[in-house]
Length: 465
Image (cartoon, rainbow, N blue to C red; front, side, top):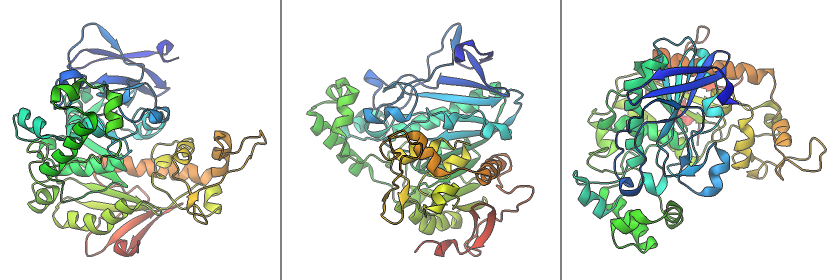
């Protein structure tokens, strides 16, 4: 039990925290508040400074996941509510001025959580000499809805992007506090996958995030440079109000969060020009070279989804054209041996297994219908491999894990991947002592294929039809 493990105490700007021994070499702190709970009158407002506490706060239990479809709670740890502005820190016991890696989870802008054991694995990235932070923030209708009345009351003539403002508040917390955990506030890398990668790309365009991070990794992220206008975002918020049959903001704020989630089920929240987080479109930000120009690594998988592929093909070269900092590109093609033998190619999210040293995460990927049989285009069929009468397809996790067929090659790929990610965080170059990773240019069209062994390739623009 975490309560009975050796403890470690640090002092933050808001108060004293007591974490616990997550492994023989790492401390962990769960459920650290970085802003006030965005509930009641604070629903649909920018995050507010966290309220200080007296005494010692025990950071040994998961805080709530962000409000979303309740059926998804099973994919994370902790409960679920609007009171979700918390982060988790994992740090080597001997940490002193180490690079910091801040993780933003996937799930589009509507779902999932950083409250998972893989995303906070004390036997993963921190073993390579970094301090890792994972962040939860507002999602869906609570994080990304604009409305004319919200714009009128905001004081800056806009609304929306509250989830992105949460991420900025978390990065401000890192700037002000991470040194107490052994991290270097002047060497912060933001990284995320899928929706988390999209959040990284958006933060690169936001002047509000300037100086809060120094490197960025987007794994299967998407960037739409022509950001949605305020008016179109407000129209979606108006539809939400209509779905709630709410005539005023007071009525909208009074509705239970579960009712708001249901009313927003068919809506598409995303970032928008809001005159605060994004005063212009992301296109203008990059093309005027006013974006956060930092070393950047983009990662896409061999059998990824359409939007990340299009981002690598068309948006990434455009980004580099308007950036001075070095950019790097990776195509992740590795799969565990059992699935590779059945023709499964690296699916959306497949690299997470290796980035976070979490072979068990393939079970979650399977349950999320990410593991595709190329012969059928549907989820892979997994039989009753352990003879207990329940197939993997019917929900036997042991069968799913066994079907993946992890071997010594996977162990080596895990080590290489974690070394590359943390080297990038440390130096801005993902190469290793034995592998030189050339920077991408539009002229060399170069990338690295991350399979069983890394390979330098050319022709990134032609990888996908």
